[in-house]
Amino acid sequence: MDKIKLNYEKALGFVSEEKVLSFKEDLQKHNEALQNKTGKGNDFLGWVNLPSSISEEMISKVEATAAQLKGKNIDIFVVVGIGGSYLGAKAVIDALSDSFAALKDNGNPLVLFAGQNISEDYLYELRELLKNKEYAMAVISKSGTTTEPALAFRLLKQDIEEKYGKEEAAQRIVAVTDAERGALKTLATEEGYETFVIPDDVGGRYSVLTPVGLIAIAVAGFSIREFIQGAKDMEVATGVDVAFEDNIAAQYAAVRNALYQDGKLIEILVNYNPKLHYVAEWWKQLYGESEGKEGKGIFPASVDFTSDLHSMGQYIQEGERKLFETVITVNNPDREVRVPSDEANLDSLNFLAGKRVDEVNKMAELGTMLAHVDGGVPNMLIELPKLNEYFIGQLLYFFERACGLSGYVLDVNPFDQPGVEAYKKNMFALLEKPGFEEETKKIKERL
Ligand code: PA5
Image (cartoon, rainbow, N blue to C red; front, top):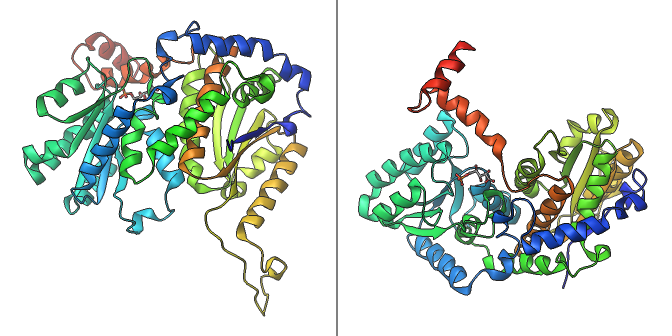
């Protein structure tokens, strides 16, 4: 099997190989705890064997639903969700799509998102756009009560019913939610929406391989089978029977924790292809929510190079030395563009004539890595042979497995997110939500 690779050679000048290897035994135990569901948060470990346990029935149902929606000749598919109910699909679709998909017709609907913010402008402008388009929607919320998507869906549901009539609208809405509980489940049942279940034991940020991610990916025209196959192969490649020396999830968890213990508090996920911007956003949620608790955790940040070398590059090169970088590199671009020769050569770029643009990008990548290492920033490198469904499936599962392991090294529960409630409580108190009278009184005294 062709596999993504991890190279941590350029971190070893900062932490020793012995230090990295000192995590080996514990990581084996942590991997067994993930596999056998004996560690912290063990009621949320359904994602561990998800790739190998997705049924043919589920895959076929997702594909059939995507085909049925596309059969309505939709221009746009709106996915309503936030956090883990949005970032996975966005990450995969952006990684695989033409950079200008929004302006080109490739025969597939454009996937747009809503409910991932509470911006009035965003919602207004989306609703205006949809008025003149053919569209369908997925509303995704495990709890079914998250304010942002609930608010967006309330508006969009009225619009779609007004445009198509209640009966046809119900044929254009798919709900993805909890099996039994939750307001969205009740609504979906009452309205007769096609409904998919988010398994109880899979938390939002680990749910991209459930219908949460799969429906939008399928509607966008990508192969969910290839995506799942990639994840499935990575499930095997990071399993308990795989030795540390071959297990890239264990190695990544070991190196980042070794660096963290050495005072490297911030990890920057770097890409050299803007299609990976949302993979980094997804990764930030995964690692930020999983590890940032009990006063601990590496702060996950991200940059898009070379763009951000002209903004964040200065800081990374010479600012506080608390950073390390993990670079995602794609070995082979899909397209070929060569630098032309120019007779006048006013830009002095003729030395590049005939070279592929990707070669310039790769030299920028190598040069930056060496400069940052020289500047005191340890580097790790994740290599993808190319950007396709299969390798993105590998990459996302690799990050999930490593995140579970890394959280256990940190001795936190990587599968809860208690801190997310604090802003919600204040927001509800400020909005005077019934049931929050006491909190409203208290918060108003602080203003
Ligand atoms: O990882 C998580 O569980 C969270 O970030 C959720 O994905 C996010 O809060 C959205 O929750 P829900 O799907 O219940 O609307």
